[in-house]
Length: 216
Image 1 (cartoon, rainbow, N blue to C red):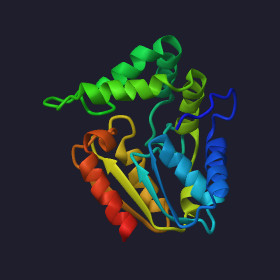
Image 2: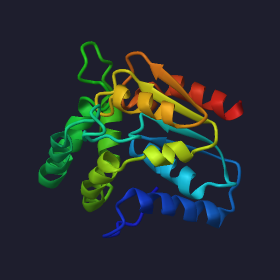
Image 3: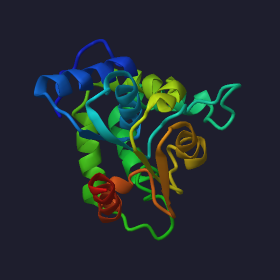
């Protein structure tokens, strides 16, 4: 959507509370929440903290939980320097940073033989540049340094985790493989060779599994 570009609240607690406000305003029940990347973290926090009696199922796609950054208790995480590099890119030349990300690791277009779509690249860049630079900069901390372990353990609805094993931004071993073991009723499906941007470049595959899960 076209969210207001506010100067505060760029953290997972606010993201989840915003989702809760929309759901409550619309009076929704039996909802299936689907979140990609940082949105998967938002889904986990929303379902755990706000979703009682309203959520039917949850889907985390290429999602960041349980914790992205490397710590003593999370040795499978990525070094904080990776995220410092993201912050530097957003702060110094956001346009080029988003173009490079979309042209390369996000969609796996940097892999030999990749079927590169300029339309996908430009559309991703367009969406990025429409957002708030402050929200993007502060959101890096939100998706990389928020620990979703307790949220995952609190989820009591059927949960599907979809992840590509060539996800260069959110490696599956440090995310979905760990998250699947924490959620009570979780199923993990790993796609060989698919990228972080599989929802765009492999939409038919991902959509088919989403619909099967929703209908089951």
